[in-house]
Amino acid sequence: MTNNTKFHLPDCGLTKVQQILGGKWKLLLLWYLSEGPRRFGEIRRCFPETTEAMLTKQLRELEQDKLIHREVFKVVPPRVEYSLTDLGLKFFPIIQAMNNWGEDNLKD
Amino acid sequence: MTNNTKFHLPDCGLTKVQQILGGKWKLLLLWYLSEGPRRFGEIRRCFPETTEAMLTKQLRELEQDKLIHREVFKVVPPRVEYSLTDLGLKFFPIIQAMNNWGEDNLKD
DNA sequence: CAGGATCCGCTACGATACTG
DNA sequence: CAGTATCGTAGCGGATCCTG
Image (cartoon, rainbow over all chains, first blue to last red; front, side, top):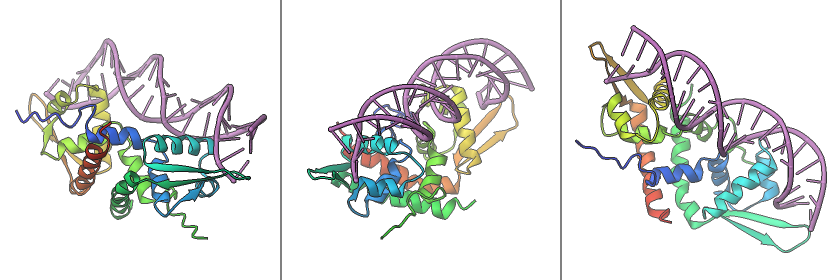
């Protein structure tokens, strides 16, 4: 038999990860934020290939899933900083591994 | 400055990984095949949540990207076995890490 | 048994304009 | 500066039927 069905269980760890990190910019955002807290404007300038609306949406979802922290400073002009949470930090090695694997093996 | 723009480069390792493994069932398929070669029918029975057409498509894409090997036996009835390539095997630890991270941290 | 061929809905993604 | 609001679109995922 060896009918180990853990692989496709709707609530298996891998499936949850896909749901949470499936967004087109999420892995890249986490990677970027691993360097330290960044303001929204900085993020925006670093990702010119997409729009503010898209970035806002994905950042908010990452915040909801507790991977990043959003801190609002009550000043004018407004200032908002995004940073990794402990949970986000714990995922960082995986991102690095994925990138390294890609760099090493997907040269074509 | 620290304007390290490696993060969003269209051809950075992480982006390539997303393109190749973005499909809904690809990570789960790689994980399943890490146990050893499997026939199409076995795969199908283990993934009842999706359709044959979908599985075929994703398996063929994984084959094109050299992550899995597809072996056809010239017999009747037809017999096709899928297995991980060396490249696919090299990615397996990352899948395990992702699943472990999900199991440990996404309990809610 | 292991697929190929169609058709089709949904939603992720994106462009643009406006605001506190 | 850091967003919202609205609308349009492509393509992924899925259902269904057909074949060597």
